[in-house]
Length: 305
Ligand code: PMP
Image 1 (cartoon, helix red, strand yellow):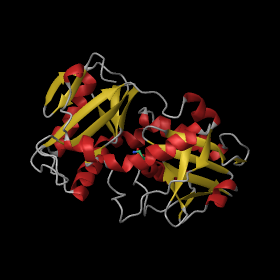
Image 2 (cartoon, protein in one colour; image 1 turned 60 degrees about the horizontal axis):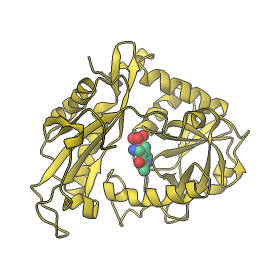
Image 3 (cartoon, rainbow, N blue to C red; image 1 turned 45 degrees about the horizontal axis):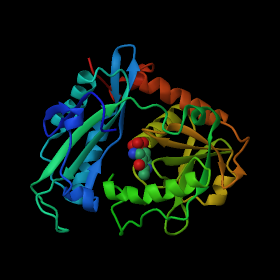
Image 4 (cartoon, helix red, strand yellow; image 1 turned 90 degrees about the vertical axis):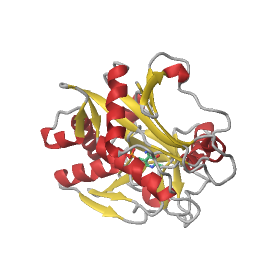
């Protein structure tokens, strides 16, 4: 990732990609106390447009607030940084990685409060769980790692350190030949994927876990809007893994993962074992929205211009 041409927004300046570095004694590198986002821009008829930028920036600031990280840049500066990296890198569509982290001011556990940095990088990134996964669905394994407990870390913050749990779960699943992990909460109920929220379809109703220990996904919220528009009843409740086994359809949602059908969990085929009709329709509407083909959602798109 480090050795390429381009520009990264770093503390208010655009710096050449290879020079966007930090010291090895960077606090966040040692302890994981930082916050980040994953955002996408899609190619639309009016040029590249960033999807739900304001909501992502709000979540970044909320994550920082939860962890007590004082980001020295405001909402507008962060939004503008996203526009700048698309323009400067000449991107048509991309994934963004904004991140706030502590510098190398000091290295005790207590972070250097006044040494907070912010970067926004952007690069082209295709389907996170594969193009084929979007069409045919993926194979998922219930993780032996539980999702964080709400008093072990802050589940509502998209915090760097939280992702060690995601990495352990994802590595375990992929090493065993699956595409992704499904994590249960500490009480054994379905929480989310390593980087996705999860939905089920059963007898024409949509089900998703409540957000106790899962991230409040922006794609999840978009799916709730799509479900309302389709007249699909939505039930937010505790879900067990055997409810997933016996669902008609299941899918993951995430900025990176978009709407990815799940065709198997723990070697149990879900429904017909392919992308189901409800998932197909939600996915179709999702891509129409992000690509600017559905005027009702134009307010969610920030044109780069
Ligand atoms: N849960 C986790 C753990 C995630 O990392 C993500 C990706 N940000 C999501 C859910 C989905 O969130 P969003 O739809 O906002 O990308």
